[in-house]
Length: 458
Image (cartoon, rainbow, N blue to C red; front, side, top):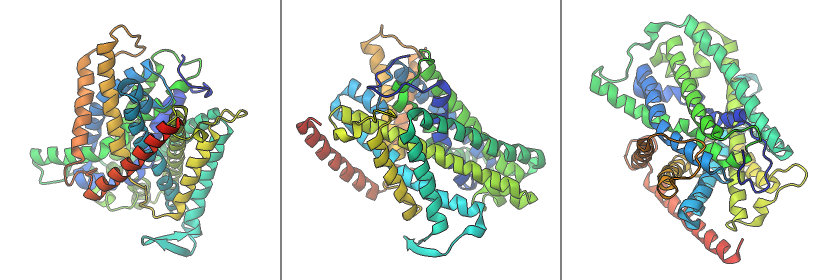
């Protein structure tokens, strides 16, 4: 399989792509959100919300599968947007997507300390200082620095090393989580799931709480979009259409994982009690049956989730910066490829040092939390591109082809619905007025960068 990689090594295999997407989709979501979701929807409300999320995001994933397989270019959605809609739109997608990937890194690095202190409480050190009311300790700072530096070092070593890190970390995560989950289903009790839904028990209440949880859950299955960034780096063993198949498989694996975890928690412990725990995925078997080993295994899996997410942030952000540099939209410094390792050494160091700032900042700091809206806008343009490509180039080769155009229309409808949800007060990703101000400021900065880089010619 070939694609416009612009000098980047072609080393990604099918399992690398699946690991990239699944690893980003899982991250720490399965550790930190079960309590909130159970409180909103109850066990069956959460389960049905996961099924609904998978079913609706299926339409978007199909559009990604067709477009990315047909145009495997470096830069993913930004490159596709430039090809389809022009240079300005391409830069806009790059500007906001890159911010999303870069700003998530510090949060996950900082959360390493939380996992470490929960795993080995005896090593919790004295408070050094506070940031926005959050206590900063050496036992909190050092793990984030070590994991961030490790991920940066692996990415600097080689593209293949970074791809292998993703697959190995995800495999360890699955092993660490599957053992407690299976144990929970063996020792738990079906009665713990009652009542099945939060609310007054009516059918209308069940529908409402399921929709509320769906509004939270759907964002955790968007991992397949990461495949777009590295599509041009597919190795020689990748067959036409494999990118599309990897996207669809990743969505399925992430959905099954979340469904299993979110059923295991309330099955192992009465769900209203489980929802009061800080990290119920790790704590239910310890609290109910005294299984300390299960607590430790899940937390080790949490560390692996941090590594897969940081690795994804590094990989995707550097590819976006590389695309922009190659197109004269960012300084050429970001496009430098190390002649020995073949890595994007400047971009990796730039993103890496931002990640390393995370442990010194407030846990709630994610710079902008622009991820959801950026990903949805990018997804909308991919869905529209799928429709436009079919109309303008009906004879174009499509290694992965959607059989029915209604699926593309479904993808457009889902992305538009998600965009509307940003404006609904009380929704999980409702955008407050302050966030609109940030969007405007960041957009204005982007406009200045775009105009200056266009004038300078990169």
